[in-house]
Image (cartoon, rainbow, N blue to C red; front, top):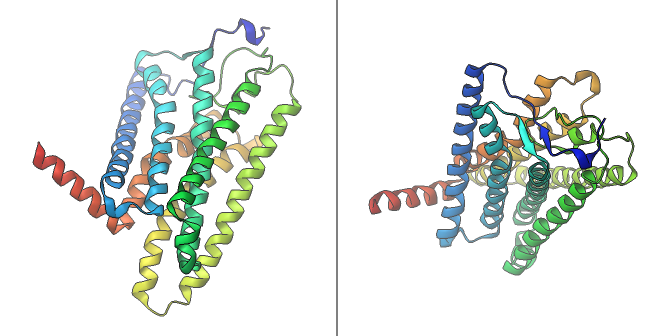
Length: 310
């Protein structure tokens, strides 16, 4: 038995047992991370350089791309290192830092997806008030609130998690440091502070989900009244990518943490964690760019200019 003061490192879950599979996982993670870096980097560059994209929708999309980049850079590099060098170690401080940044970026992701839903709701259901409700100052305040609240929540969560005494070894059943896995190592099965933080997080997440569902119900009611098929198609082209991203992200993360214990297994837990922590940051740029003609044109212009210079 040991306590947290004597733990200098944690052991992460090995992605594979054989060397061939470890190298295969390394190549897959490398491909996913490069796709995420390229896709999100192109979105950030296109929105930053394209003055016609300086609108609330693309401003929030830029912030979402930043959070996606943060999520990928928090979890993937260490997993790639462990697969390549056949190790499972992560230092105590490294684990705390990884948990903090993962919580930070995933909390910001939820907040930004909710704000983007509000942007779509106002632009479609209250177009006359769009300039007032979503002016440049209001957008900056909403983005700052999303990042600040994510920072505060992740800081409190991380500090409380690592203040708990640990006496069930140092092996984590996940390929990155995650709160549920660290709580399994805790000496006490019930901690009021941690339960309070989790309850607050669940309530906020549920509130965001309810708001998104309510907003899209109102949006679809308005869209179905539009007589022009072209008008309906244009609105759907901006709403459906966001709805797809929200569905993928929330469904996998909620199922991963709320599924019954009887369904839990190392392989299923690993697959679900990859689905909500690795796949969405890589797919988000593709989903948004495929359905948004303005963004596709801006990315095409950006890449054409880059190739002409080189």
